[in-house]
Length: 206
Image (tube, rainbow, N blue to C red; front, side, top):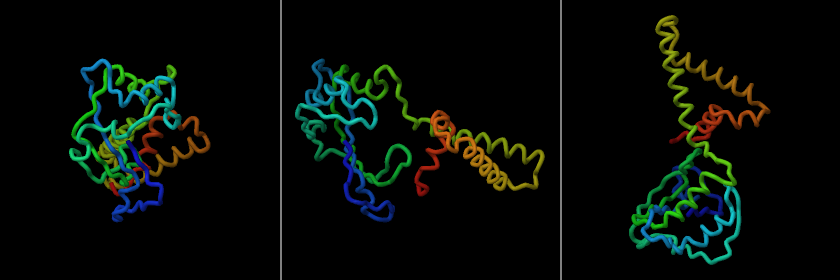
């Protein structure tokens, strides 16, 4: 469960109030022995099976009553870990207070299958989260860095390594801006561009 603060919250990390932008209640789900499933989750999973809010950003209503405390595991008020953290995907804003419960909620295999279907497939179309592409840019940077060091050592030993990297970074940025300026459709499908943007949006204080 994710709760968002409706008032304006400071993003400055030194401000104690910054961690109240979001509160996340994290419950681990496990496969249970009962084929009947967990009735507390039935209204939500039933709505998903009916096609309500299948895609990220979609909204819909659930006709049956949902009791939020029934979605939490046993002894949720006493057995939990809490810490000041961040969002799990870029920009990784450090404005989150996490509560991770020690106990789990058990769902049937069929119920877990409904959740897996929503996260990975909708109307026969595979929906991918771009977060995994974040590893592409550091891999590319390491490759370029190693190649640059090898080149400088053999051919231009008088040129400082950091200066060469700065020049390469400027050229890389210029090329990206020249290629993708005003061409958003192309940029959407370019993995390196997406990876670069993910890293550019990360909080520099991390």
